[in-house]
Amino acid sequence: MGLDVDSVAPVPDLHSWLSGRALMQDLIRQHLLRAQERMKCQADKGHSKRVFSAGDKVFLKLQPYVQSSLVRRANNKLSFRFFGPLKIIEKLGSVAYRLELPSSSSDPSSFSCVSVEALSW
Image (cartoon, rainbow, N blue to C red; front, side, top):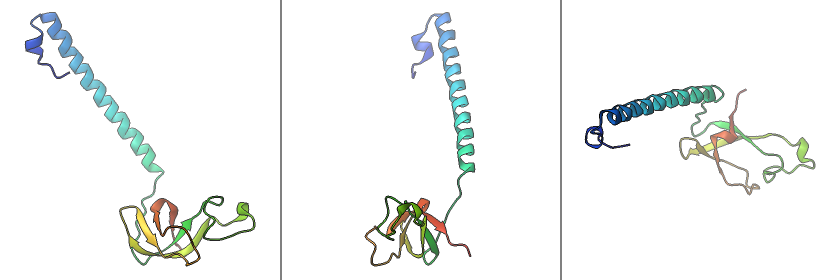
């Protein structure tokens, strides 16, 4: 709590209760940190680290009913999931890239690495 135990608790019983409470708070904090580390480890197992550089060719993942400005299809249900290959012009941040899109596109040219898949032939 931020209180000095000796100045606040001249009574011995209160002093022991406050020191026991501080010990329990530290123990609970330690258990919570260990549980958070375990949850992060489990969550990171399903993630893959994607790092691209300028000049790499990648596919752009599209949402069929939302992002239809790149490719027009008669039936959105049968449209392609990925569009490309597209060239990375520059890296904007740790997970953002600017792509070279066709001139007919009205989408922005910067995308997160979640939307970008590596080109593997």
